[in-house]
Amino acid sequence: MKPDFELKLQAWLDGELPAAGAEQARRLAAADPEAARLLAELQAIKTAFLDSEQTVTVPESREFYWSKIERQIQREAAVHPALGPSWAERFRRWLAPLAGTAALAAVLLVALNQFKPQQTAFNQVSGMTDEYNPRTFRDNPSGINFVVFQAARQTSAASDVPQPARIRNDGSSFLIEHE
Amino acid sequence: MPDQPENPTDVDLVRLAQKGDMRAFEELVARHRDKVYSRAYSMMRNEDEALDLSQDAWVKGWQRLGQFQGDSTFVTWMTRIVINLCLDQLRRLKRKRAESLEALEEEPGGVEAHIEITAPNPTAGLERAEVRASINRALAQMSAKHRTVLILHEFEQMEYKEIAKRMQCSVGTVMSRLFYARRHMASLLAGLRREN
Image (tube, rainbow over all chains, first blue to last red; front, side):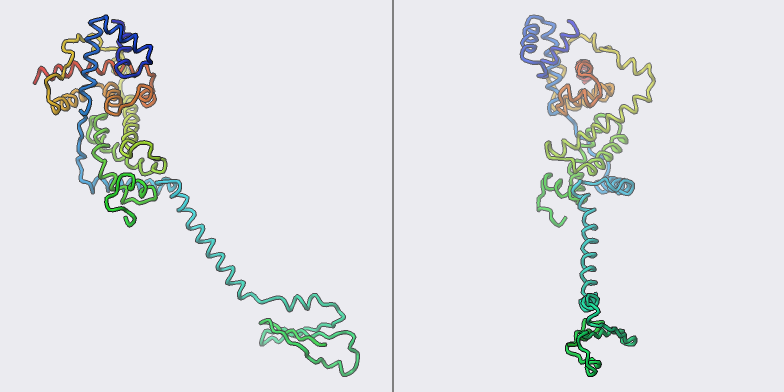
């Protein structure tokens, strides 16, 4: 029997031949007693393997066997931190600290904003023109700025003494406005 | 495992392990360690090597859990990992062997090509346990290449093409190795039967 035909017979047995090849192999096996005997032997071996695998028990206790695996996982994770159970898990591990840091920064920003002095009064003063004649005084011990301004059109002697009309306190400075 | 169901299935445990739950993974190891070890042992025929390779397979399994999509069962997926590790190890061992021995093993057909078919069914009349033990003993006497191709085809139900891919050879080589492995197995089983 030709080696090619032997392999073809086997492929037929294993269901690896297309329909046309299978039919040819079947006809040849039927016509050749030696091929039929070979086919029977191959079939017997194939059948003998069914449900014939022996399960071998691990010759170590569950705890000992696992402890070695766990140590190796930890060792390799220390060398290659990116190795892990899943991409999602890895992403979560990186994202969680990042999100925490971002949240903390946001809280700090809001808190700092709360205690930041309002600049409204200074803006108003700085935006005023000379016609209001602004004058600034600073009380160093208290750390407070006093800004006094007066409309330029007031020219009488009595008007030299400022008469406060409105006082605004923004926390670090008083703004005294005169009519 | 706080989120673990009372009687978790493999699917439940895999899902937990994929989230990083090592205790769930330990349970999977406990359930399937014999199966994974058996496959390594059947291929390597060496207890120490089988232990090392099966443990390596579990470590790889943990590291690649994110790639497990559930297309096969978890234990099938793990078995494929240990098979790949065993094939790598067999290739390393092959490189260490002398060229002359390698050439002898690679000879197409070898002795088996000329074996007469004396008993078409060499396991006829044997009990299932006897057949299992005989196959186990016969596998131990075969070359690594013939043993491997038989294990992948008969136990793992792999097709020729997949075996060729894993063993890094042609489909023709797989067919040839499988044929002579079966013929060798037949003669070994017939011999064991006569001994008994």
